[in-house]
Length: 356
Ligand code: F1P
Image (cartoon, rainbow, N blue to C red):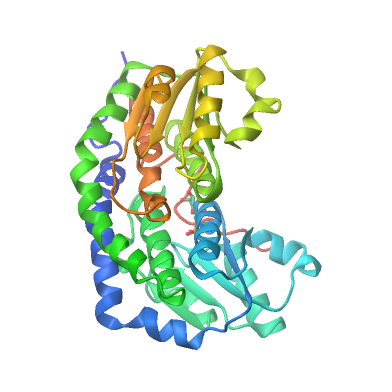
């Protein structure tokens, strides 16, 4: 029998459960300070936005870039910070860089920030959860979300809070008052659904473990699938992978078996095509989990497990909330394996490369 440490994962689960309340505090603080409006006025127009980070913060960058283009109409892409320092020649100088880092101390992010500010003379925008950190000293502008900071090694509420804050800046920039209203309703709506989502994933993780965990999504949800994959890897030391949903049909589906849990994070925009893949994978014998805003008869037939978010906000405003099932799956699978999700094997809260 596995000896369970009652304190294992105490920080992580508290941080996951506090997500809706944390988003509310962050959005309220930004509204009261007017920081987003004044940032929006200072930041250049008609330029490409490049969202930069490492690990979870890189996956966040991908979800933020997809949301940015949609809400502002401006070009946007995401890059891991290391690409900027290792292949600077591939980096186009004229852009607005956004450096995403919970800790504010990750080596590659700091190196990229130095390079962008001092060599390319770009005025970077940073977003972090720490105060008085190195990134704050290097970046020209810095958004600080202290309410979202964490004690756990793994990122959960910091990920969703930084994403929602960047979406809120995008909504201001794109004159999307409707989207800002939707974001302000999100915390209460998610809080109302939390117990159901929590108990579905907890009982799934407690009843089954799998040889392989696959996460599939498209569009702004792809970064969410990547982050869900990382949560399962970090917290439960399990083998986990991620693909664009329709890409899974082009080779990766060879791995489908009942011992593989294939999670579909289903969008509204790509609903019909994504549900078709779910049906195909169920026929091939995979074990399936569907995360959607609302299901239909095909999802009910083809999904072994299903989480319905049932949120009354536009699709892009649901992106952050869609990672909660993956966070809970990683957490409870880790607990079941006798691990401590607060302190995953081989990881540290901040990754700083040794300088030779
Ligand atoms: C993020 C990160 C996480 C990882 C670990 C160390 O760095 O690399 O992805 O899970 O917790 O930190 P940052 O956002 O602090 O730069």
